[in-house]
Length: 255
Image (tube, rainbow, N blue to C red; front, side, top):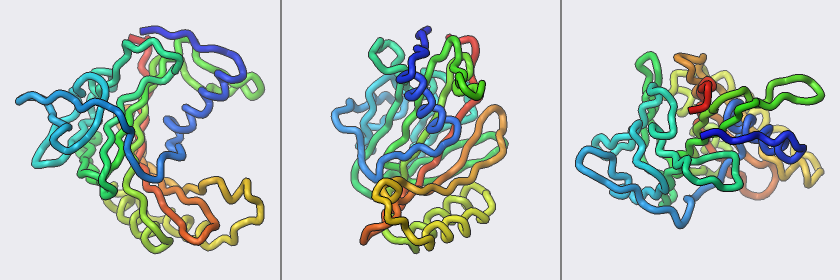
């Protein structure tokens, strides 16, 4: 499938936002929840049955996902593709982004496991597992800086929304545990603590923006995987959203 990429200001703005989410892994995400109205993926004896875990998904059955002992397992060492991640590319809608979203409700999330290159695995709980696909046959370059905002080809990204936690202590603990589970140093925990302790500004615009801290593994086999935590300063209650994210090297030419 090949899509033309608009060079208008609105298209550049939308694409720049996608790059920030997919390649930098700092997307704002949801504080909790699921995507309503999606259909359950069909189950078969040799295919993952996500409906068993009250997970909604609209699209083909993903070939990169299996269920083992009640855990949703994603093999991220496979070559990224629409088939691997269960993304329906047949919808010629207004969006340039195709999505394969696996959503569950219940607040506490469901058990998921990600198999990474070099024998690494990451276990987590997730409300949302969202794969994104963007086709850019011409690429997008900043007209002012010359920076490549979107490379030519097909780009894949992943965002995983973990259940939100309330309060600074819980937010710091959840982020620290995630870093240790991935095998990352905990240096950025101090950065998170400093940002939490910083006095909120009096500007309602700034206070409405989320603050994020993140860390990631070195790229391996064309995959970058990391974790971030986001919170909004100010207010009586501070909610922290833990997000895992991944992005792959661009696939070119577009299939």
